[in-house]
Amino acid sequence: MAASSASRETKHAPSDVSGYLFLYQDEGGGYDDGQRTSVPAVVPRRPNRGLRNMTLLISTVAIIFLASNIYLGLPPYAFSDFGSCPCQPSRVPQYFQTSPELWPGATATGKPAFMAQTRAFEPIDAATFVPNDPLQTSIPIEGMTEGNKSIFKMMGHLSPYSPSPGFGVDEYPIPEGAEIVQIQMLSRHGARYPNPDSDVAELGGRIANASGKFNTKGPLGFLMDWKYELGQDILVPKGRQELFDSGVLHSYMYGRLYNPHSKLIVRTTTRDRMLKSAENWVAGLFGLGWTNNATIEVIIEAVGFNNSLAGDLNCPNTAKADYKSPVEAWVEIYLQD
Image 1 (cartoon, rainbow, N blue to C red):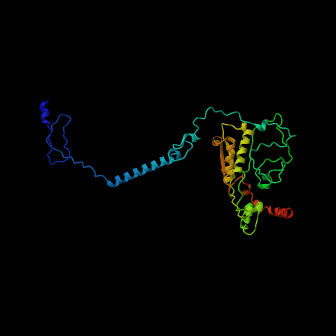
Image 2 (tube, one colour; image 1 turned 30 degrees about the vertical axis):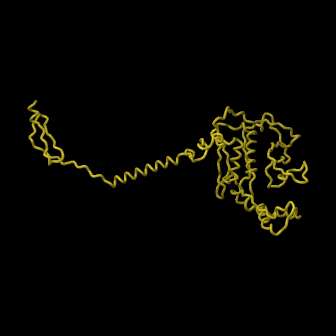
Image 3 (tube, rainbow, N blue to C red; image 1 turned 90 degrees about the horizontal axis):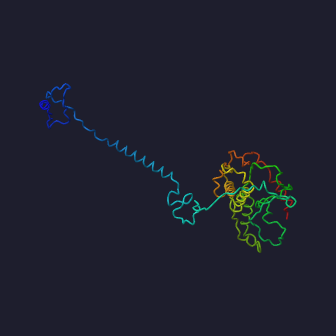
């Protein structure tokens, strides 16, 4: 074994040879003939700077894109500089926080009211069931007696909403054995500011423009420097309360019909006064957390869109109706003085 090993001693390549020298030994124990076989040197490739720069640029852009998506996907309240709900603000004292409710105490929802089914009254005493109205809009007027109506109920179509006395049709409780199983409610918007082209706006402009041409005194002295400053179209505070109170009333009258395992569909239009009326109504019906109980479907109110809540946009004959002539005839007869 020693001789065999000696005869196969490795032969080193001279110093001027680069690369590697293979040692050959056959499987049958043959010997090395001492011939060296040169192997081409393996030279590593020079790095491609353009490819490396391009790879680095693409990686940087991908990281920035991913980071921006994560940032934009976070809710505003995830940062200390943004608002309140639905998480706890970091800079608002705890005693000013309303959401989430930290210590609500023992809470439970009672059985919903159902006055439409259970109310009872004698039609002899009252022809129409009129719910209480806590808001007082009357003002003292000289000569007004106890039996006079509020001046706010004597303004024609400009009067705030109030329940109708029934038009001669008496109301009665539902017959014995009858059962209310469903309600479909359709409501107008609440009291609002006039349209910009309404008669009220025109009258206000005419009075303001003529203030320097007449002299008023006494109760009308304010007209000397009065200006028309009403808004346009949006709900007034009374209008918001009307729809909120309507929602509260429907909760008392029909609350038991609501299925708490489903959401109501409340439809309205894109007009500001319409959308705000719907929101105030469901807020009165369910409270400020109404989004857990109802979904508002907003229908576009504009020419060319199918809108069952704005019939004047769907009927081509609406604009052809002549309603001014009868009004002008009535004015000529009854408003001569």
